[in-house]
Length: 212
Image (cartoon, rainbow, N blue to C red; front, side):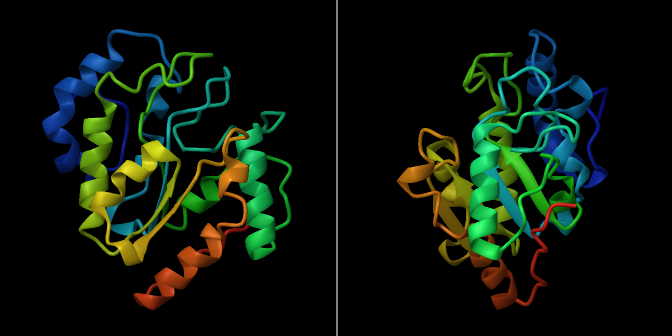
């Protein structure tokens, strides 16, 4: 493929039919994360994905979006409220101590794909890019993952629309961890322990959810 943002070669065949759309999206607007990080989560080879966590779109605050859904740069403070809620549930669910930073790349290294339904955003404008073509691409990714032994964690209504691609016994759904919806069912949903139970039920090793 031509000069698209970098990703592991294993995703090339899946993304190839969408190359023109991707070039059009990225060539006509200012957006976050940075160009080279748009596909940062796809540095994880397709065949190594064990869990996918789907969110909505990148953080709208300047400097927060990294290309990994829900993650922020290690040196960025303060933590976004959404990430604080994730850490609260992480502690309550599997006893992980709340880390001082928001870098979730250690999850990616274990086979957890951190993917937003929409891959870019205009600074300060939540949902700004939800209708510009990303969903066709992330739907294709979800469809491919659904044909494999992958546990899907779907946070929020945008992500839950992807449940049709995944086997119900491999899917965990809840409201989004944002402050607007976390108390409507995200907190207490135990996605981390439940996903490990699913992985073990299909003969895969559990994830170490601690933040490195």
